[in-house]
Each structure stands twice: as structure tokens, then as C-alpha cells.
Image 1: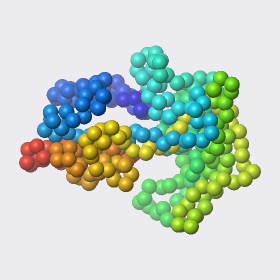
Image 2: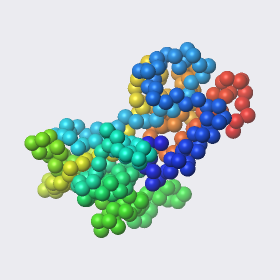
Image 3: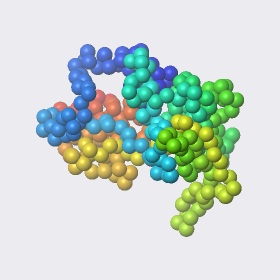
Image 4: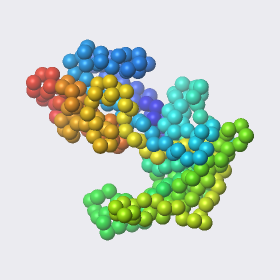
Length: 303
């Protein structure tokens, strides 16, 4: 509803239509209720015959460098969520973050970074720069990326296309990372210091980014958005129920089974498999419904 901008997913025609259908089928939505705060976590397993956890993978990766505490530095989802709420409500809320008239630096890529680019442009930013620590992909497939694998090639998503049309070029700067934030006497961020990196192998054969001397730059910025991915699901429900986790902190459950370490508690989506695409959410939602039905009824006719 809030994390995906309206220009990518119409909430009234798509999301609300589906919610209305679910309500008509008998699903009860309890809003403004935080499990573990407004509702005891234990009541989920005590009051219901089965529980399905689909909490997503929402713990953002931070960037603990000098100046991180300056005002104007936000996680990408804070920016995107508040913007969508303002669009749906018809006016900005108290958490609204505006890019209007600002130089925006987005640190990170992927769909989240692209959405930050597109949203910043719609809000009227003065400029937008997107820092990517990875190298620029090749124009054509590499030998180790044959068909039918997904082509790992250079391409521009809608956000970069819009930025190129607005400002004359792709906003992404590759093999570049931020080293510190600069601010003014009021504690407001004013610039991002960057350096280019070179990916080198360490003693264990792992590729790690090494700073390239002499490539330092200073980018003006009054708004910085951190879009560097996610570390895993939020911990309170996991800790309260004592659920087993895998090595990446996701709730442990096998694909196509969705059963956790607690009988009657199922898990699906990003909190099981890690941050992924919405098509996997569809797939896992249907799969976990099937296994929950089998658990409750002893058999199932769901696909």
C-alpha cells in the first residue's frame, strides 16, 4: 500500500479493489495494531488454531559513517512511505519528507533506489544523483551469463529514464561509495563525500571494495536517501515466539512447506526467503495457504 509509489501501483484500482474482495469473502483486517505492543504476541498462538507470518524483510541496512546523525539523511522507505501516504490522503503528514528544491543523493540501487529517483523528480528536486558501489553492468551478456538466465546487462528503469530526460543523463555513478556526510551549523546535511572503489580479492578469495586514492569528490546534498537493501525481518515477533532463524536472520522454513519450528505457525514471503520480488509474494502466499489448509483440515484441494 505505502512502500510502492502510486505511479508504479495504483492503490485505488488495484490494492483497494483486492482488499474489498477479501473483506467480502470474510477476511477481517485489524488496523493500527502492532503485535507485541497493542496485542500480546502470545495471543496469536493461544487464540488461533493457525498463524501465518508475512511480516516482510524491513530492517534497513544503515551507513554508519561520519555525519550520519545530520538532519536530512533518511532511510529510503521512510521517504517513500510518507510520500505515498501524502498522495493517498491528499496532503502531507507530519512524517512527510520533501525533495522539492533540493539536491538529492541516493545511496544504493535496485527497485527501492529507482523509486526514490522517480519520487524525488515528482516532488521537484533540483538534482538527483544515485551512488552504486557495484561496477556498471556490460552492454551485452557476459560469457558466464548465458540464456535463459536473466540478462545481467546495463539498462535504465523508469526512474533513471525520467532523470535522463529531466537532467540529461543517467543519475547513477558506479563503483562509488560515500565516506562521510557534511553538515552546517544547524545540523543539516549539506554534502556527501565520495570515493571510487576497486573490487579486489582478499586472502579468503572474497571480493571487497578498496578505495582508489585521488578519486575523492564532494556532492552537494540537502537530502540523502539510504537505499542499500535490507538485513532481514523485524525481530520482536521472532524473539517473543522463539522462532528458529536461518543464517541470514530470516525465519527458518522450507520452500513449499512453510512450517516454522513451532507447530501451527507458518511463514511466507520476504521474512522467509529474504528481500525479493512481488511475484514471489504471490507464489508463497498461495503456497502457505495450501499448507495451512492441510494442517487444519488434514487434506487440501488448494494448488
